[in-house]
Amino acid sequence: MSKHRAILPLKYYDAQGRIQPNRLLYLSLLFLMRGYLVFIASLSYRQDPSLILSLFYPDKGYFYFSLLLGLPALIIIGMVFWRHKLFDTRARRLFSAVRVLVILSLVVDAAFHVLMAHHGHWQFSWLIALTLLLDLLFVLYWYRSQTLRLMLRDWYRPPVI
Image: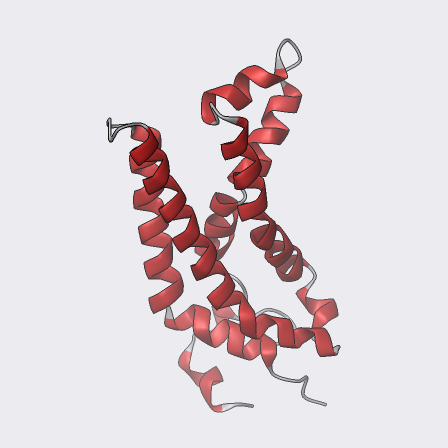
C-alpha cells in the first residue's frame, strides 16, 4: 500500500482499492459539458428545438464554442466512467493531465464569458454572472482539493500485483 492511502477514510475507496470520484468532480465536468446538455434538452423539445438553444446561446458561434470547450470534459468523464479498464493499460497515464486540462478549460470558459459580457456592453446578465461564479468556484476546487490530487495520483499509479 502506498503512503497516501492512510490519509482518507475507507468510504473514499472503491472495491478495487482506488479512490472514488466525488460529486464535485462530476458536477464540475457536467458544468463544462453544459453545451451538450442544452443540446440534448433542445432535441427533446419537439415543437421548436432551436428555441431552447436560442435562450442559452443567442449567437450560434457561442453554442459551437461551448461544444468545443466541453469536449475535454466529455472525454474526461468518459475516462472516469471507464477508469477501471484504463487502470491496467498504459492509458492510465492520461490521468496525469486531467487536472491541468480541466483548470485550463474552466479558465477559458471564464474568459469567454467575460468576452460575452464585453460584447453585451457590460450589461448585467444573471446567466453570465452565475457562470463566472461557478467557473471561479470550480477552478478553486480543482486547484486546492487535496482529495482530488490524491485521487488522480492514485489513478495514475500502476496496479499492484
